[in-house]
Length: 320
Figure 1: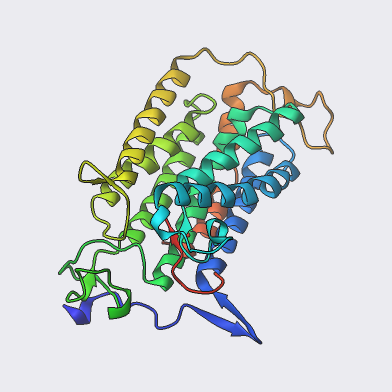
Figure 2: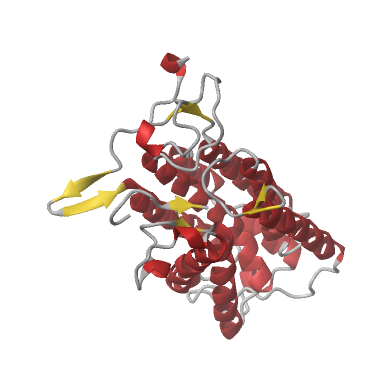
């Protein structure tokens, strides 16, 4: 079985002169870049100014990192480094995806409201992009030999070096590659959201609601497999309850949005080069949703495919 296992990388980064670049950090940069590039195309297809996606990334990325770190601090306080800056040391501990998405969403909503842009339409445009970014980020977990699951004898088991195995599992060599399962699920869910958007039958905000529900639903399964340190409640990992709550909230949100009457007018500003009264800016909601999802899907999937799958000192960072 060992011969059929997935090997772990022997290095976690590379040097550029005196600077050591962690693959973990590099994968996050690549994932963010892909999300912005795909988001620009989708928002432009919806009749909006693609530069607005850049503005949102300028605010959303740093606040997302901050939110992810605060979530990690709140849910795994034992892993906070005992230094004055430990609560911000993302390279020593990790990030929590739910905290990152939550704080980034709040900040971006404020930006969109100030610009008079439809928040729900933008959320739909960016939902598949977030999944692509998360998938690429999981490749960094592979290089760090982290966020794997229980021991396994499956032929695709992940071989983990002895110094990366958690206490109680030092005698095992192969583990479930849960980060890989999540990577594949993220890409599949992104493709599904794009397909649903092309059909034009999901009301504004529905794709983002399905993103929340779909990603969280998979995390329920993943949290039952992972063996890395986590706070527990009633014998289950804390993130299990968070995932269950987010799944339910996403499904309820989707149902409410689907029952809501369609908006009589679009709130997507046309790109600067187009007249304010252009066809793109006056398109009804159903047409905007279809146009948003009709963005160059082939390019989006082509960009995400190579990324099938939380950088400074130690490769112990975890994306939770």
